[in-house]
Length: 562
Image (cartoon, rainbow, N blue to C red; front, side, top):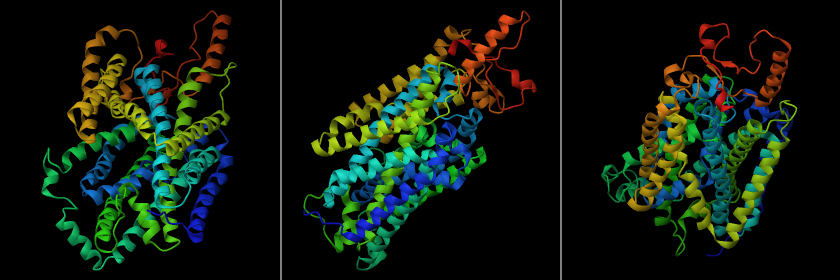
């Protein structure tokens, strides 16, 4: 198949889009440089609707943008149950998860894990996120590069550079605020792009929407009775829905790139509204993206035909460059770029947050005890990780060695859903402890690997097994080891569970560990100078109430976990 050229007008549209995203980052550069709170949490300035758009754009990668229409083209709409699952878990997130993230005022999701279980679980969760997302960024660059370069004459290095390098630059400059407002622009572009494909596709078919509906009904391209049967050739909707619930619980409770957005709004109510916005956008995805696949099924049956041996993963960009007018096809390529860049920039900023807050600030405070306020280190992490990911994407494009990288992602990805089980154990049970959740995480991942490798289950069924396995093993082993751990810590974690959601909480790890170092030193000097007992200056701050209230002093510091 000869790859067509894009032409000057299409290139102009793409360049305007790329410059616009860069301009947004430049606009927010000064604000992002104020400190870590601005760089990672935007100081709570983001409106709820924008945060919701950002969550949507972050979770909808270029892979999804191309693979969702492909799924509808080849099969049916059964996977749309996954989008319904996103909307269905919004009440669960708002009632049971958001209050704890907001109560602790976390920068990373894994700060909750330390408060609930100790530093080892925090580090493990954070490192697993970082490793998986380094690999994911490379794949999110590589797959659109492969698809676009296969149907156009664009050099793969140009695509990887436009998608990857520019993402690094605007994430480096604008911090999370620049990333979120770029996500808003990118989210609008990718939705408009999808609508354009639908409209032009329907208009190009003789009979229009009627022909599309007739073809879909005749070939079971929507939902059929087989989609409700277990073990059949068609995807079983109950399994798709249930597995998607657990996959989305991982994404929305245990994955830093989404959880970080919860802290960018000014209140828990705004965070709740952002999740509602995202939920409605997820529902809008169903007619748009699954509709594209169904329309293109009719288009290539009646109006045109696909080349011999065509790889359907490039279906959307191929339609864009061969069937759409000049300028419009450029908009569609820009939409694919936008879907990739929103995911990449979110991952880069979140990786930087984990390395900065969970590793450097937690375990390597400054020697003089002064809090680190600069963002130079955080920006350096973005550059290093971005360069590594772009390099890997270019290597995969040049050598076709994607299978090795897929293996790396499959291994690290096995821990994602079980990690969501760890968060659930922390929030919904009183007795879950460090030994139990660590064993649950490892056994849940091992169980997922076994059933995936031997039972031939669908990815949705594997996710269900992984989540339930992590929770069951984690809880049972917590019960068995509970007596051994009793007395090792006097720290009250009940306020971090649903049984103490409204109670005040005393952090075992101060929000700014470096300040705790200085405070501890000052306390030691004070104790040496005075014979009378005094309140230690390194007491962790009480979260959720006034210190004079009876509940504010209900918990003491845990000396074992510092």
